[in-house]
Amino acid sequence: EIALTQSPGTLTLSPGERATLSCRASQSVTSNYVAWYQQKPGQAPRLLMYGTSSRATGIPDRFSGSGSETEFTLTISRLEPEDIAVYYCQQYGSSPHSFGPGTKLEIK
Amino acid sequence: EVQLVQSGAEVKKPGESLKISCKGSGYNFAGYWIGWVRQMPGKGLEWMGMIYPADSDTTYSPSFQGQVTLSVDMSMNTAYLQWSSLKASDTAFYFCARLWGNYHFDYWGQGTLVTVSS
Image 1: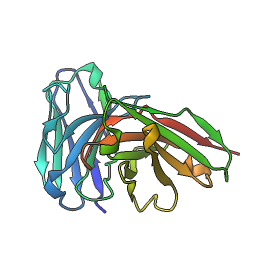
Image 2: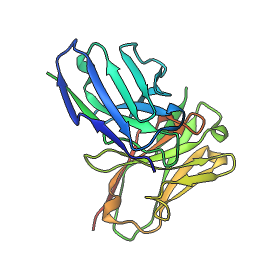
Image 3: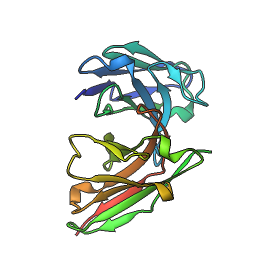
Image 4: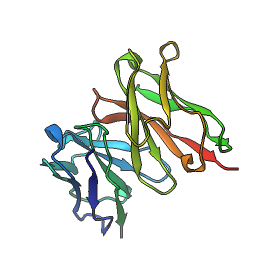
């Protein structure tokens, strides 16, 4: 099984700043099959990115993804107050399709 | 419009059985895997397993193998998650979600809260 770790656990930034969220896998992820989800309080998760760097439908281009093998990054270029959420990475290259523990994004 | 609508909140006692549902609409239900995700109170997401409605092919996470059962009713476009004997530690939100291919989750249900308490 592939274990994912995410850092930092909590990230506090101001509107307009750039956020960099990291996801590390315990072994190489097949075909860089990594997705990112955003979960706001009381809501279901929402798909942001898949295949490491492809944006899901309706996701603004402020969100971007990069990485390969065991190191992956979600970048939010210009933070907006609505970006307050927990962000989870997921690998789906091998079963079970594990999730990371999440990064909580707070806005100052 | 693709929609996954889950059944309502449940309150059960330890040892009781339970089956919760996830009804898909707006797409070819048979042709997309449905997955289930657990979220314990205040915690992260855990991938439980997935089922392919067309042939009921099922894959479970080792952490949930033998603890839950996934099934589908193609006539109702509905997927199910069931327990034969609930434990207090099963208290959580449970989300169903559609998989694109057998890959990432692209659409999610609203979640079902299961509370197990004596």
